[in-house]
Structure formats: C-alpha cells, structure tokens
Length: 220
Image (cartoon, rainbow, N blue to C red; front, top):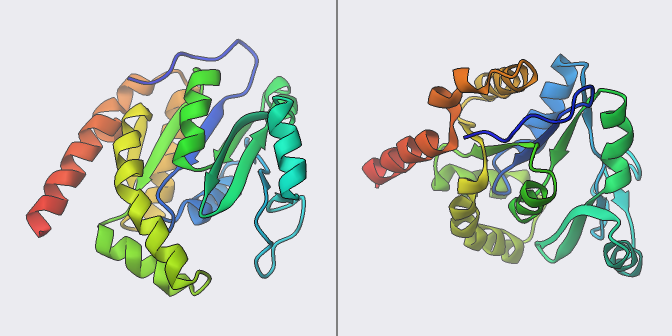
C-alpha cells in the first residue's frame, strides 16, 4: 500500500532506487526531461567524479571528513555507504523545492530509501528491477567504469537489495527504457492526483516482485 499524502501545498518526494546497473540514472534523467514539475535532488558523495561529472550538478563531491561532519550534525535526510563510498541527501536539498510546491526526485541507494521511509513517511518509493540478474551483470560490465572487484561487490549486494524492496510502494521492470520511463511517469501522475489505488494492481511492489521472481525462476 502506498504512503500517506503529504501536507497540503507542498511538493511530493519521489524516491527512485535500484540495484546498481538497473538504469535508475538514465530513467531519472528522462523523467526530468519530460516532466517540468520534477526537480532532482543533488546528493553528496565521497567518491571521485567520473568523466563529465560536475560538482554541484551531478553530485556535491566532498571529503570523508566533511561528509561525516554533516552526518553527525543530522544534516542528512538519508545517507549510506555503497561500493566503498558514502552517499547522502541533505535536508536542504529537498526543503526549498518542496515548500515552493515542486516535486523532488531522489535517485538513491536502497539503504538510503529505508531511512527516507522512516523519516519522510509521505514519500513515494519506486523500486526499479532489471529484466534478469544476468542482464544486470552485463550492464555493469558494459559500462566500463568499474573494476572487476567493484562489479563483484555490487552483484553480491543484489539479493539484499531485492529483499529490501518490500518497503517500497511501487516497482517497475526496466526491460525497455521507453516503456519504463512512461511507467514511472504514470506513478508520478497518480500520486499527484491522490489516485495511487488506480495503479496498485499494475505497479504495486508486491505483485510486481511476485511476477518477476516467477519469471526468473522459470528462466532458471
């Protein structure tokens, strides 16, 4: 069942999370292009910038010391360690757009989503699934950005991330990018309209995960 509505006049918080390599960054970028009412939250991270990434645009790249100072002072709505690096969403990153009525998208890890569930129970959590575990590993290798040890570590986390999907409101399988983008936008529209019940049967996480697991088992 989806989370309760937020306060009148405020924007909504949409959390998009998934195992690494599922395509959440691409999907978030696309839904922002198609829906002007959405604004991305820029996270803090201790990892180094990748090619083409800009500080303050893709992430706030900070030192481990600065990150820990923010965490200790309760400066984060959520924060987690993933792949040997720390990531976090500051309260300030969401408060201004929400108060102005804009909707905020958090592209975060599953660990962080659990904290959002606890601290912002009105948030809508959307979990993205890969078509299969094999395709997920292929995507990770195909990016060419991670060392073998990092890929192995991320694949080892997948079972734990899938188990955590039960705290999410909705789930979508990213089998075809264009379809997945439109499905996420359908969820956004339904939540804005207060009509989450109309999409529960299609995108409710329990049903989607059941069907996905059945398909995976059949393939195996």
